[in-house]
Image (cartoon, rainbow, N blue to C red):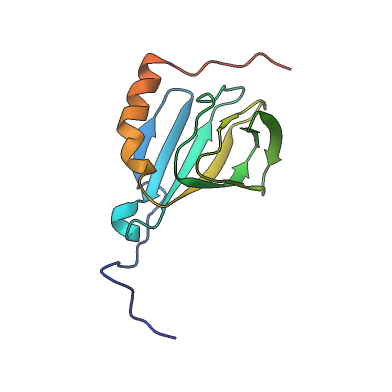
Length: 142
């Protein structure tokens, strides 16, 4: 097994209190590896939604999303269809597919997002600004 890396990339360990944090009110994200660290191949982030939190609304973008649900149940709306993804679930959302997500549960929901290729993370300052003007709402109890 080779110990040499590819290109100029270096091994990276990010501790739990590190990463680039983005507060969006009832939702927050922490980016651990971006295009700079991955040779523009992907980015990795965690997303956390408070209980009964609506999502960002239907949208699409060119990057693929791969979600892995850490805790709670993530309600995914992909091409207009709702699917609840519980802890341990994976979801692949190809670039260009309309989607959104919400937390309909009574507990916090968290998921890892891998975006490929990298580039989505560059939109985060604008996304945070958008949520300041358009705060996420609390969903009514079921």
